[in-house]
Image (cartoon, rainbow, N blue to C red; front, side):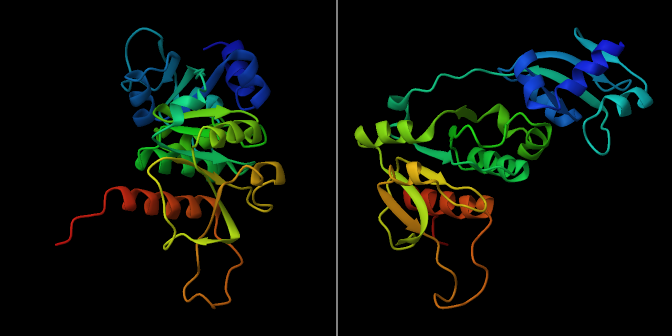
Length: 251
């Protein structure tokens, strides 16, 4: 392992470094094992002895793995992976459920939402430029491999959502004045907008929303927390949309 390789890994902790080199870091045997069998290209693997073998694999000592790792506790392997480039075609979003994240900035929230999308069969997420980078090391680890299967697109949301609405794709958003999601009519296709942790949905994006939804507290007049965590709210919404499409069989 060279000094230049250590400097490269360190550079990839930063968004600018990832953009410059076109690479991101993944750590851990399970995640790297999934990456090796995926459509993503693994450029190089640094590993402790006996974990991985083959072309592009370099065995390093435990102290060197600790120097390389971007995590608080180093794992047994670290990979340099090429950042994928996906085309965004609004027409292709017809007939399916899609998420749109409007300046969601916490890496943990983003990682959880990508994992939720994977669980609920959502293959595309649209992100505003102000949303956290999905290839941030913390996000990559939080997705637990879901970042391999979910395509994340960074784009100006308002024009994209307006174009989708013009093509008849429902654009849902969560608002305090929205319709109770449990009584609202939901469609199998649509784009669901989730807003920033503190500010909610921005005004330009809010103007593109065609269906406003609200997750009510229980009971409805209870005075408790002001709002739900954005990742938690996303899980509730995805679950309700999917429940309407394929209701579970009764015992």
